Length: 427
View 1 (cartoon, rainbow, N blue to C red):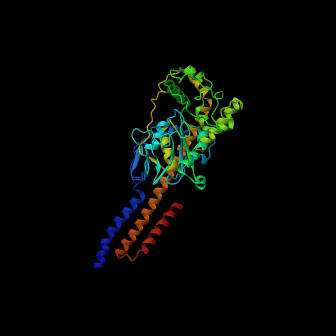
View 2: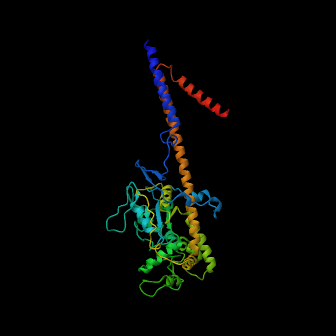
View 3: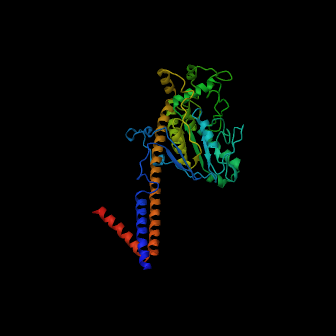
């Protein structure tokens, strides 16, 4: 009698369990199958501390270039820039800061806005922060706001690649073996050439000079004949745009290409070593190659995408979302089409570099979003498989306790059902 009562009790319990299993299979907890999704768009990133940062992306995916109109053949290696940045080891992140590209804002993000085991120590009133590795008095970041201008004011690629390893190895007292194993990951920011040029003009007009920059190349700075000054006084305060554009030695012209290229390929600042046409072609090709091979670069016009790609590249997470600010001084400058054409002509190399950089940047963003979706689908599938295994184990135990004769029959029943379902699909 007692055995019959146990079986009667077991039947409704088993039915409920079967319903629960079916519901979990069709509608897993993190699936969108059983409810309507809202139209809100956003990026979701899980942080190591366990909470999720959710922010909407105003830069819609329609910015992505169409495959049919692509001018460049990028490989998967060009698109997949994820690196194993060992902040606890000897790896160093090097920020190449090009003037008027939003580098000051991005540099502050690096020292104040990254979620780290040991955050940078930024004291009020001090320009530099101490960015040490966890448990070690060594800096993992080479930038204006961490190490200062240790290789010169706004040092370019030519200067940084020859200076940074020497400075950092000396600072951290690395042995010869440690030097050879050290990785230096270069990063930078780029900006639309016309906007950047106008922003630099306004900055110079207010009194900025950068005349203390070293411009080292092949072990020496340029001579006065190689790089003559555009003004005779202390600075160029109040310079009209027409005069700013008229100086042939103005380093604002094609600044982004010059600062990203290997200048030693064209005799540094010696303009007579090669023809102007050949010099431009060599510098542009070098800048493209160096930019493509950098660990990361961002675009001022795409702040949220820049944040997303940085996080994907280095496996680091920002605390606060980046903000897109379009109301800049350059945006407030009204210029005619004729002046715009003149600026584009003076910065023809920068214009071509930026078109290249923008397409590569958006391709990388598209590639990483697709990879993220694939990773999320795989994670959901693995979690679903784990839930199903747990349910089978639980059901077998429940059947055994209810007097079902052991778990072997349940396993056989499940296997038969799955086999039957697969045969139905084949039929």
